[in-house]
Amino acid sequence: MWVKTELQKVEGYLQKLFKNQGITLKEPFSKDAPAEVSLGGEFIAVIYKNEDEGEISYDLNMSILPEDIE
Image (cartoon, rainbow, N blue to C red; front, side, top):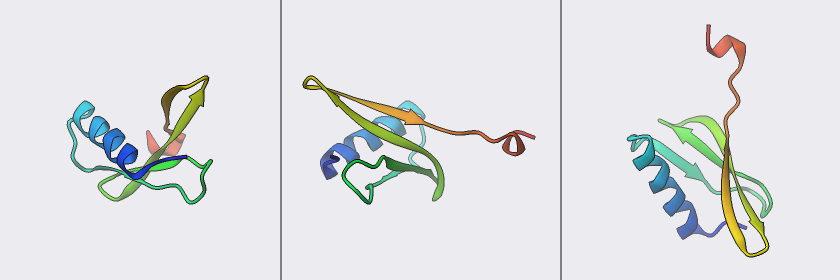
């Protein structure tokens, strides 16, 4: 389950990592759903929060379609 401050921290990390303040995270609709990642208001990826044996990690998943790269 995501906490609002946690979303803000991950969002800030991604903005700093990619040097782009246009990256935003949107809170998931349900507790087990991933957060949505947008760039300049356009959906680009999802990020999952994983909790295992007290350890937390975040997995960014971005799908790229063949028509997107042509």
